[in-house]
Structure formats: structure tokens, C-alpha cells
Image 1: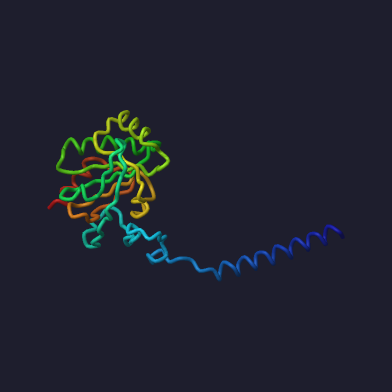
Image 2: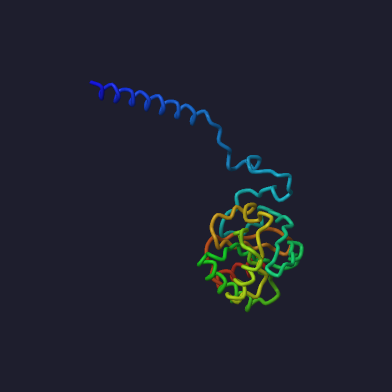
Length: 198
């Protein structure tokens, strides 16, 4: 008899709890992911977020101007986006602990060998807990000859980078032209670059 009463009490509590939970969820307002006003704002011009960025297609019609981000490089120098004007720029969003990012380095090396200084390549570490010394060591161990810096301005947030490696191509006018998630082989990258240079 006592266990039946306890069981009934638990059942009533569960029914009330589920009903209250359902009421709260149905009356909550969730932000619209297509409304840029719902994204964080800390009075920084880099928070003028672009529309949803599609993968593996030319984004020229979207006319997305990339903010003038600054990157603190492994050398301690600062590089900003205006330094890249006039050339195609590849931003490689990566992390030291990411195995696929290490594989991506090999493809970027081949691309740099093919294009030399006619394009810019910059690897951007999304793990901002890394130190410049750690980046310097990583750069030496992986034979990276292009700039490697930290994402101190939240460029990966602005671009909505979800996975690494993530590579974006920016044209010489500062427009975002291409986004690619995952490892991207040198041949496909070169084909894309050639199509964007036409």
C-alpha cells in the first residue's frame, strides 16, 4: 500500500514536470539563425557577420567584403588583411593538434611551390590558447614556409568555421570568394584558384 502511494506520487511529479517543461519549451523564443541581429555584438566592426557562407562555390555574387583582421604571427609580427590586397589569399584555419591540418600543410606546400609569391597563404590557428613559441615550433617541425598566426580577432567565428581544416579564398579586392571545409588537395585548390583568376 505504501509503495503504491510512493509510486503514485512519483507519477504525479513526473506528469507535472513534463507538462511544465513542455510549456516552457513551447513558449521560449529561439534566435533565428538567418537573422544577423541575433549574433553577438561587442561594438566591433568584425561583427557585421556575412550571410550563411556556402561551401565549394564561387561567392562573388554575395559581395562579402572581409574585415581588416589582424593576425599575430609566430614571429611576433602583426599581419593584417590589407597586406594581402592585389593577390589571391588563402586562409587555412587549423590547429596544431589536428592531424588533418598536418596533411593540409603538404597540399599547401605544393600549392606554394606552384604559385610562389603570386598568391598569399596564411595558416590561422583557431586554438588561441597556443603560444607564439608553440606556433614557431610547429612551423619548424612541419616545414611551413608561409605565415602562421593566431586567430586573435575571431575571424573563424565571423566565417562560421565549424570544422578544421577550413580553407577560404579571398580575392585581391578583399572579397570572400570560396569556402572549403576539410582537407583540400593541391590539384583541386589550383583549379579553383585558376577559375577565380579568370
